Amino acid sequence: MSYRYLGRRTFLASATAALTATSLQVSMSRSARAAEEANMKKTDFGNLKSVRAGVLNVGYYDIGPADGRVVVLLHGFPYDVQSYIEVGPSLAKQGYRVLIPYLRGHGPTSFVDTSTPRSGEQAALGKDLIDFLDAIGIKKAIFAGYDWGGRAGCVAAALWPERCSGLVSVNGYLIQDIANADKPAPARVERGFWYQFYFQTDRGRAGLRANRSDIAKIMWRENSPTWKFDDVTFERSAKSFENPDYVDVVIHSYRHRLGGASGYREYEALQSRLASQPTITVPTVTLDGDADGVVLATDGKAQASRFSAKRVHHVIAGAGHNLPQEAPSAFVDAIEEVAAMT
Image (cartoon, rainbow, N blue to C red; front, side):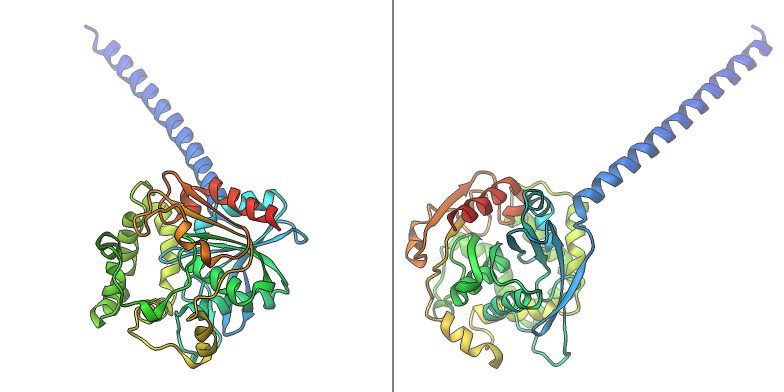
């Protein structure tokens, strides 16, 4: 065999491999750029806005036509505005003006005064929503949310019905009956509330401060056992948990609801009204996910007396606790349904 021929053949093979590798790198680079651009479209609501609203500087997004019917989308714990990354743009395309605020203790939302109590009680969440509407000049809106956000919507709809044209609430009536907080739920439900009991302790506060991201990821998995979210999806929201007020607000929220902490004077009058478990008098659509790892799905009949206007209840197949992000089409449909009631 000719060594000269072998050398040429080896050279040609090497050159071909190099060209193939270069082409592959270019192709992968283009694919990576395309994937990154697609990812940005899925995670970006546009320009973040901020407004002073009551005791807070609220970070929020405002998408859709300025003259559209207003919907406020309210996230839960431990989540953030990314729960609405598909719902928000979908509603905006249909002509709604969509407002998506970060709740107190989350993301860029901050307290105006360092001396303001870092309350997480339900009255504070409801008042924040009304202060937010006042700050941006909105007289009336549809409130839609889940978990903390659903509670804020229920509180505001019950206490300020003139400001709410319709309500969408995951897990139904979410105003806490704190006077009866010591009554146990079924064992399966109690097990899902481990974090609430943990947060009653000093160890729990320290744990949340040290391990907020790990705790949130465990909750995501247990709250939504069928939702196959990836690390990138989780990390987009986890950034919001680095808010300096996150731990104080969260700890007070769970201690207050279980009777382990007093409310603050600023909210006494509102909480007194909430203690009566006020009826919600605006048109409402309630939703349960049949894969919710925290709150068992029901037919909604047990809460019927809590709503005096038209109310429709749906169970969403395959959805867990973070229903808007897991089943965005169903959540959009619910908003359209309540909009048609008014």
